[in-house]
Image 1 (cartoon, rainbow, N blue to C red):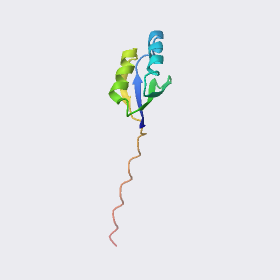
Image 2 (cartoon, rainbow, N blue to C red):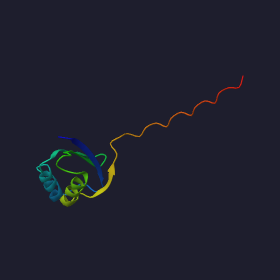
Image 3 (cartoon, rainbow, N blue to C red):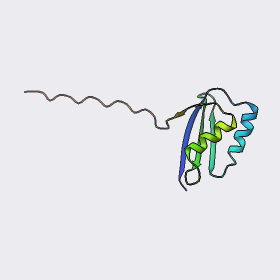
Image 4 (cartoon, rainbow, N blue to C red):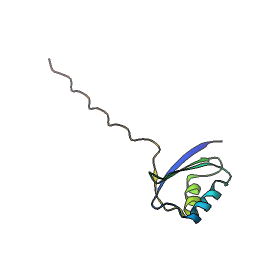
Length: 90
């Protein structure tokens, strides 16, 4: 089993119908967890990559009625490297 996570940003909160459909997404064999962050308007899905692909997860969420806007990187932005100091000519 290879567990992967994918995170998406959605535009509008899910309707009651979409929420019920998203509950059924959790029942799909290979989907391990679905987490919502209402403040950031994101949904994170943990899934078994030996059974599902990221494209299938995206399609399941869209078909449930969730208004997916973009995929969000799970890797936080890294700070820019500091410029190397020029050697002093002494």
